[in-house]
Length: 347
Image (cartoon, rainbow, N blue to C red; front, top):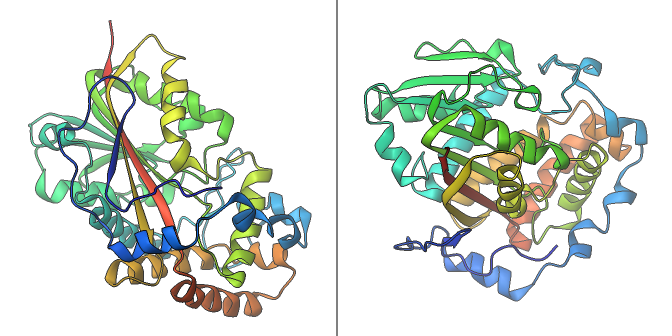
């Protein structure tokens, strides 16, 4: 898979007819750009070790009901989501929220949505809200809006300033048509199968009011300039997601998913904007250090099944994580993330 971004400047792409009025300054420093230019990544570089990384094919279909560790996971039989849902994971999601704010410059990417949340009575929905890291961040300086959230991890939904309920976007959101002024969803790359993305977009459109806005943020699981030990973990995880039909390049494919979802509805999506940034892992200062911690914690969350996939002990897996993260400094590993926002028009 080639690089999805040739420049470290935020890149806006119009999917319809308007162009961005301005392009913000670069989010990550030129050193990321230099790394990309010095060693273009091709698909084989990232994926070549995927099949050989898997030592136990049964582990490809691990489900949280098979969990035999002290980590907590969701209990939804029909969901293939394989990351934890405990408070340790919530700490990671709060760190992740800070990383995304630094990368995109705001908790809310869509300028019009930033204005909407300042209005009293504006209804906001966060799909896949977990314990409310994003809701928390937005509420702090926009307390007049009415906040809602939904997630499959019911034990995380006790949030005092938002109405959070169980909801699985793959099976239909528990809200009436035309309910929300602003719908936010992010980083469900490991939860939404590739062939379900259009229906998910259509469901977000359904619950959005005419004239309302939708914002999506995703990352590519396929990362760039991986070292050999990092590739062992990434290759096995990608094999697991691929076996479940997930889109491991959800960030790169997000604009096409949006277009396909629009076709399933009678609504029209206008003012559709896409913004892509690259984030260093364990290099290029504070943001790289934060991303390294985030990925390290995410890797720890795969401990119930990843050692089985790799054919190693849990203790060997712990050591492999440390080596893999350390390698990122040498290989200048980075990940691409995209944000897409759009206005929903209905007759």
